[in-house]
Image 1 (cartoon, rainbow, N blue to C red):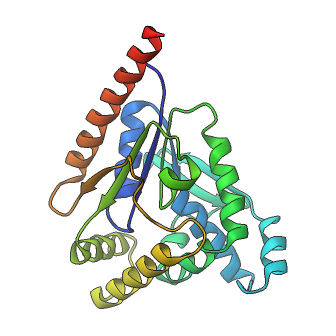
Image 2 (tube, rainbow, N blue to C red):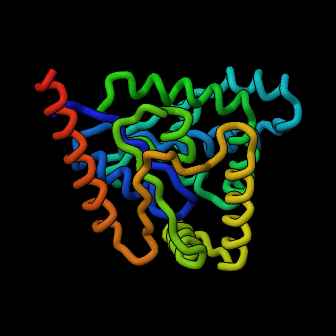
Length: 234
């Protein structure tokens, strides 16, 4: 069937990345974690003391950043590499989470990473998750999904993710971090987080990851069949 671009947007800790990874594997598509890309840039800025208000420093720093994804056979998923170093675990830590929304709001950063994201999907057959994929990166994506969930559930999920990485963080601190990120993501001037008019909204509060994947998989297959018939009709 005709390959498509699946754009998955939504708030943090709604299950976007987990669902997108499994969906891509089931479809035989490439998975691109755009959130990891922004986290990698945030980590570089932190480690190199880049001031986000210094446009010259930001622009110069971006020329020194190379992000890639390499498949990890042990975890059966892709790890994020920053300038040749595996930073998959480091970019998931709270100190990076506290910085990533500020960094991702910078026009120069978004322009740089959006260009990279668009190159990765030139041949389609891609599942990409983030916050502006269906509205800005791929406004013409054949399938757009927008994921939401209750705050308490989102915070608990993030706490469990951190615990799995041997990081113990108080739930109240996680809620504060998520609320801060939500505010910055939805109010930033550069491609803010919002639901695309033609996106399917999925509330993941009370459904499992498997149910999320099955739901999107059914929509994706239906969309591909629809496009196949359109091509044949022409």
